[in-house]
Length: 260
Image 1 (cartoon, rainbow, N blue to C red):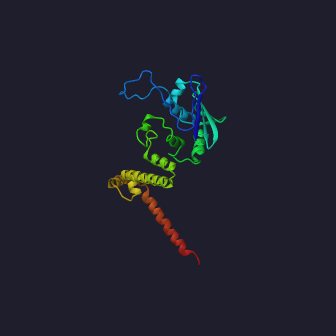
Image 2 (image 1 turned 90 degrees about the horizontal axis):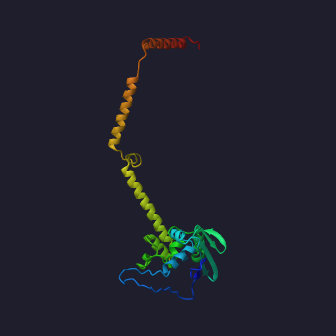
Image 3 (image 1 turned 30 degrees about the vertical axis):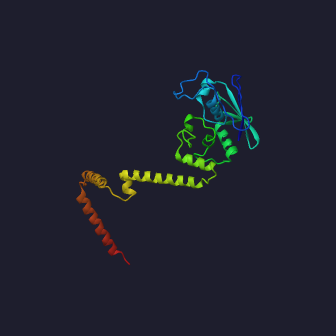
């Protein structure tokens, strides 16, 4: 990929034309600050240029652009494998990008750039257009602190995954190890939850909790006592018993007198 130009629809913006080879943006302060004040910004547009490049290539919405640059449109022209492309994005309608005459979403723009530049058609978590392109165009001051700082607060896994991909190292083992690690962590968290829950401990681990057993027995005793207290014997119980005995006797007699 090679950048060609960065332009805007406002005459106050001076077009940035990228030439062959290394391009350096420098600026001279009219009233330099104290050398020890730690301020390296002089307002000539070095950092803004980087942000605008990311902006045209589908970065997340930049609220300050909407507030301070309403209705501005920025167009980035670039070349990939000898073929020219352009991308135009408006500060007012930041959810859309005009890519070579086609209106697409910022998500669609990132997906398209990921395929064009890196040949990735099925992106993986932590291996995205933003994480890969940010290794070539660092937007933030914190991204220059150490040799492997490309994305603010990037996880160690993301660093290893993106760096190894760009170095041509097979990332399948990295992804596989991450998946196994996630399963191991989930299993450990589940085990801890089961050990803390008395019901899980009893029914899934086979370890009875004595306090739980005592409470269950006390509840069952209480229910049986209620049933006993509510049980009532019929007033004519003895009459019914005598009648049942008579019926049983008559049945026996009938069986004896039945002719074979």
